[in-house]
Length: 239
Image (tube, rainbow, N blue to C red; front, side, top):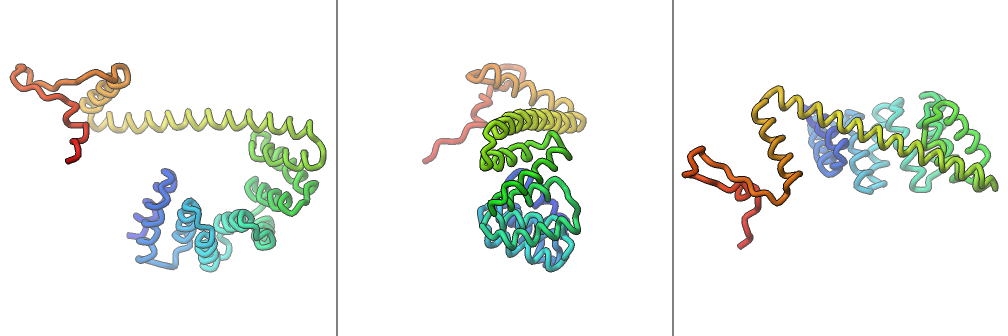
């Protein structure tokens, strides 16, 4: 079932396991090689592995299969820009501006292309627009600092960097909190399925954190049979 491999690839992407992601995409292609989403996922995998040429090839295939695939065009434009192909990147950016609307991502892409072309004032105007749309977009302030500095506005550049750092710290804290919530939810799901086993595991993990050198002994309740827990969790010495 191709959908299973697509889901595996999506999970691997979240885990930043790009090799496993690519393997899942290849298996999905063996089932059906005309699904644009599979080529997009494969492009994300090989981009994560640093293969820009294959990234562009996969994205071009995705766009050929689905010309209005905005997500594929956006990633292709970003990759083209990163590899110095500014005219080609601008073609995709222009298509996105016309057909997908002026989202924050598309506007930031257009601004980055203009900075690369030396069009600092135009880039600054777009960064200002993104900041107006979303005053909490750290990328807008980080990007805007460059044109400010290039145009001799050192004070404004420094102010943007301060705001960007603050927004980045805020985003990191939010991500950390969301991660803690996700871990709690996962633990609760395990607890709901196996309350006793989960409580025991949490107890042993807490002991390991508090007393890392503690040796845990498992007994049968009569002290006639005692097994050191570490013998089950440490690797046997190599021959």
